[in-house]
Structure formats: structure tokens, C-alpha cells
Image 1 (cartoon, rainbow, N blue to C red):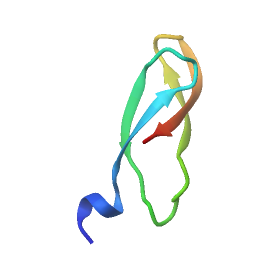
Image 2 (cartoon, rainbow, N blue to C red):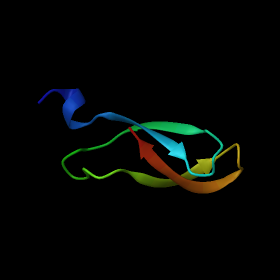
Image 3 (tube, rainbow, N blue to C red):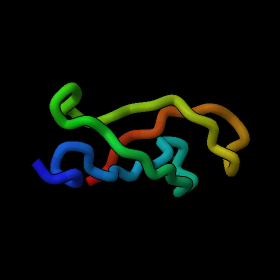
Length: 54
């Protein structure tokens, strides 16, 4: 498999509605569902859930 197929680059968007995003890679085999991470949003100045957008 090519590198991009196994671990694609995904964009994580803040659920606080600020429009802030993180960019990361994810493993499709171990987690095919959408990724949700709790990270710091500097616009909202607090930790919020960041959901994968496609």
C-alpha cells in the first residue's frame, strides 16, 4: 500500500465554532471511524473536542 492510503492526512475542526483546525495523520486500519480528539482551541481559550472532517 502507498503511504497516503494507509495513513491519510486528516483535518480536525473545533466543535466550539471558532473555525480553528489541527492537521494530523490517522491509521485507517485501527480506526476507520471519524477521529475525535480533545485539544486546546486558542481562539476559545479552552479545551474542546475536535472532530475529523472529510
